[in-house]
Image 1 (cartoon, one colour):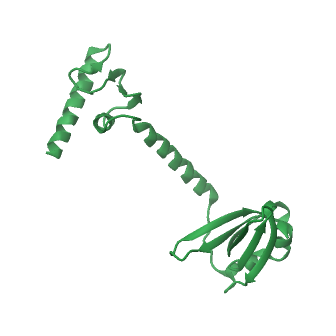
Image 2 (cartoon, rainbow, N blue to C red):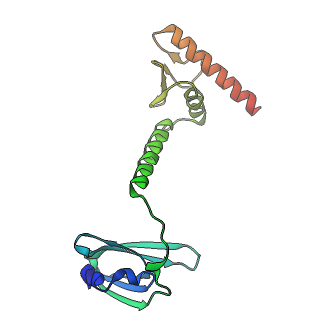
Image 3 (cartoon, rainbow, N blue to C red):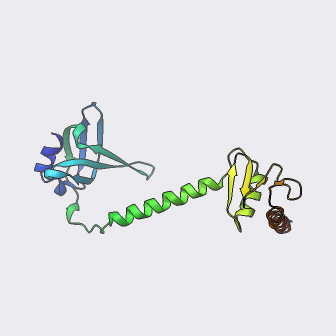
Length: 184
């Protein structure tokens, strides 16, 4: 019963066993013991059960030990799963990769305009190839100038520095012309 009793049974030797777990909420969960997290004091802090579905998919149920009321082994492990080779996982490397991917996803999300037309996004993407562009509502900000809807390079670029306005207009015109040439 609970995490302490599971640890005393030598839970690692039960990896691969078919278990039926009843939680303190009365939920019954069945599956193969896939993973055990041993916390401080050598007690089980959580378990993961693998449920193989008829569709070929699998579900993993992560259950914290403090909500486990009862554990029943319905079948032992088919092999000694604890002795099977498990590759080393460097959690620092996993954490670093996760942070890098989160930062990348956040940067990508900033590149997507909210409530803008496909044309507006194309204009933004074209400018982003050579300049740092940001969204401000439906307006595109680049090099201190603002490109307003409908994003025409001749009429809709506003800024105080005429040379920057001309540069942005030229880049936008050439990118749009190149895109039109590739599409046609």
